[in-house]
Image (cartoon, rainbow, N blue to C red; front, side, top):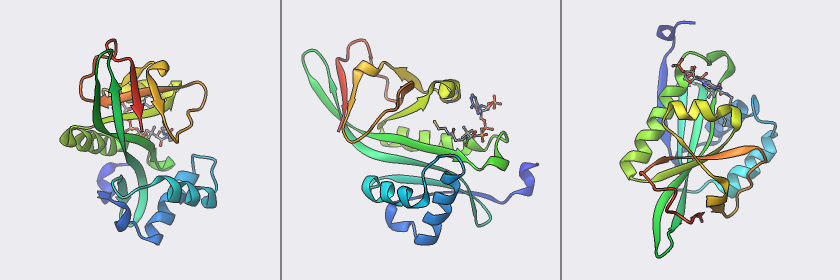
Length: 180
Ligand SMILES: CC(C)(COP(=O)(O)OP(=O)(O)OC[C@H]1O[C@@H](n2cnc3c(N)ncnc32)[C@H](O)[C@@H]1OP(=O)(O)O)[C@@H](O)C(=O)NCCC(=O)NCCS
């Protein structure tokens, strides 16, 4: 497949600009990789997506062929003698449609996400399977030891790792990062 043949467009949308039809295309794409049914995705979406979150949607013509969401959260860095709060994004769910993989298309979404994080001066966190560490390292994400992070309303699966992107942080000096 040659990239020239495609009519690619990346759009960044907030919740109020995701209509039913577009949402259903996103759920369909996610369902090709994640085991969750359409209805459980709907419930997850309703419970977890908020108005400050950013949805990055890669189109080929009218088809949704890539997706990622940055979910807004507040964080606290706990140092031995002080606490600093910051804004953050949880980086969730990057996916490229099967037949469009290995063409470099994830870079379009990854680079845009990174630009958004940098421009806002946020920090961003993700959890991934160990086998995906190299993929994220390629985009300059770094690992954070599990014991440095606490998070509300989020369940990390076993054998997954935390990674972050954004502001330089001195992990050694930080006692805890609390994602609220
Ligand atoms: C992971 C995924 C998004 C990559 O998308 P893609 O469009 O195929 O990736 P690209 O072609 O843009 O690759 C970008 C770079 O990352 C590398 N890469 C791609 N997949 C990788 C992987 N699984 N592990 C390590 N490196 C990987 C590529 O080699 C490429 O590097 P190069 O430019 O030096 O060749 C895609 O495989 C996917 O949707 N997987 C299923 C969903 C998933 O697992 N998401 C991650 C959840 S944590």
